[in-house]
Amino acid sequence: MLAFAFEEASVCSVPLRVVHAWSPPGGRAHLSFGSGGGEEKDLAAAEERALAQMPAPWRERCPNVEVATALVSGSPEVALVESASRAGLLVVGRHVRRVPVGPHLGAVAHAAIHHALCPVAVVPFS
Image 1 (cartoon, rainbow, N blue to C red):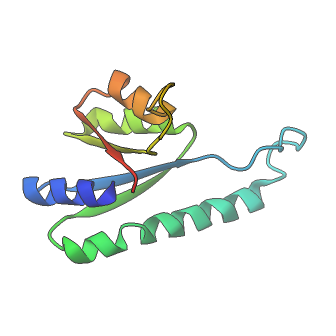
Image 2: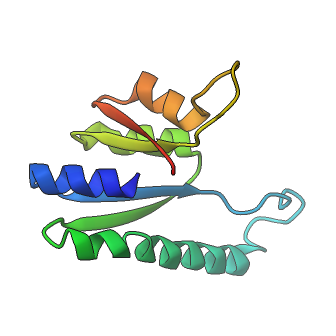
């Protein structure tokens, strides 16, 4: 998926924004507001570091592509659709399903296709 996004950005000479949505682990409803903040900040920092490293191999292959990363807290469906409001193309990945019946798109790709205000490319994960 990132390879496709980098290639498109390179061909079109446009910047690329890599968005990753995440939510802190569940099971915190019993904690008072702010009591788990330190652990959540540590987890967010770890997610941010992992996200910063993710596009590294493609940055080397496409050095002309300007890349920005964004870690967004919350639902991936909402985060990507909102991020796509200013995009020329939204690239989302999907897992390849090898079952004969049932949906073949996940919730994120489905939401992107139906709600994004820009063209959407759904790229299967290898």
